[in-house]
Image 1 (cartoon, rainbow, N blue to C red):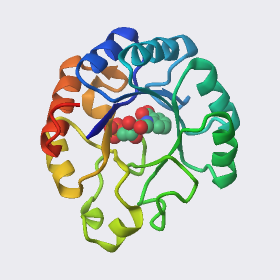
Image 2 (cartoon, rainbow, N blue to C red; image 1 turned 120 degrees about the horizontal axis):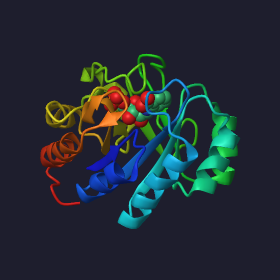
Image 3 (cartoon, rainbow, N blue to C red; image 1 turned 180 degrees about the vertical axis):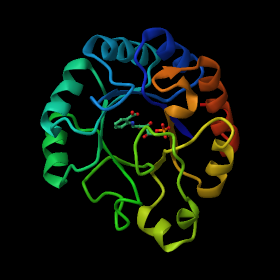
Length: 212
Ligand SMILES: O=C(O)c1ccccc1NCC(=O)[C@H](O)[C@H](O)COP(=O)(O)O
């Protein structure tokens, strides 16, 4: 079970997430986000991810795709995560700069979406409002459903997860990975180290992969 902790902005919390067993650290650059990171904050998180040998993911929702990929490359991110209205041409242009690009999308907003439609490395299935902490109905994604056949297996579950609910949600839909932001915070934008640790243990325990 791949675990991404998103919305980090400082070295100490990033280091704690690495030590707790995270597989990826996300940094959000979005003016509308309470987690909006500056270049210096992003660099701190990237340095901790690199030191821990895990992925650093730049998350954007409004920045033009080419500028986002150039920013990610310049700051040392391995992955660019594009949320929202980016089309296939945006993905192709970003991938020419940084090969690893993920697509974050919501079935509520785009019920017909298919894994790989934009040429993305990974599909992240999120709630309707990214970073809101709001959960969503996972039942159409249960293994064996038509939707699941279309989405495949290598996707990341996000949206409203926390240390209390992640185990049940993982067991229900068996994603390849999970992503969390609000659920490991004390207040919007302020991460809680103990919640990060508990989230990672719960996610791995449910998937039967306590060891990374
Ligand atoms: O986190 C944000 O504020 C954000 C803002 C704009 C675009 C994306 C954003 N977050 C992306 C993520 O990957 C979140 O971790 C994901 O949406 C889950 O969020 P949450 O429901 O808060 O766990």
